[in-house]
Image (tube, rainbow, N blue to C red):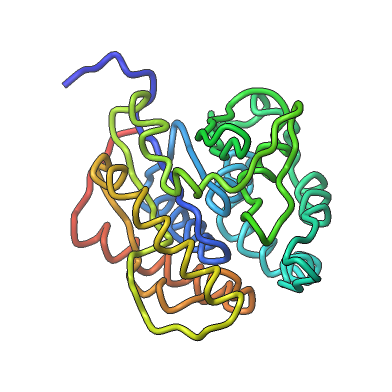
Length: 259
């Protein structure tokens, strides 16, 4: 069947904190099966992986970046009074790491989703400077100060759209969605971080159901629920889980996609 859509294969990457590193593992498996995206979309951690992949980094190189000691230090959660702290160190790190400075310089068209905190709207960025919307998409409310872009305050794209499938669905014939935030209501402890994470889990649950239905192929490693959003020390395990889960699914489905 022929369509008028400009791209063959699209891949949408959800948010999920450090669990988003499973995206890199899934991309590695897809690479090995010869499946390459023609367009990408990402939210929060998924936006980071999408931007790096579109910038020419291999999945293994992305995993290595996440394991870098300087990256680990800047993503340690250290809550000062009021529960709000700066994301400037992360912004500087990503600014140095990304070779492309503008969306137009990426090798794969990429959409990054953030939330307009002033108007309560989900906003898609695909043109201009990359780093500002990327930081905005990662700015988890309460934990990080909102990112100000052209006078507007933005926060984590996952607040309204944690799984940006609908963002690129109109542009591609076949869409693969990678969800790093499976819907599991597990046990929890009454601490600031656990309550915040659980709140975000339930919020994500409400806004990803529609997008999951839009996927032609949904890759959703259920065991990802065993990891906390900020469990930075488990990055390599998460990467490997994404890789093995995707490889198993692709082998069982005998998926054939012509690029």
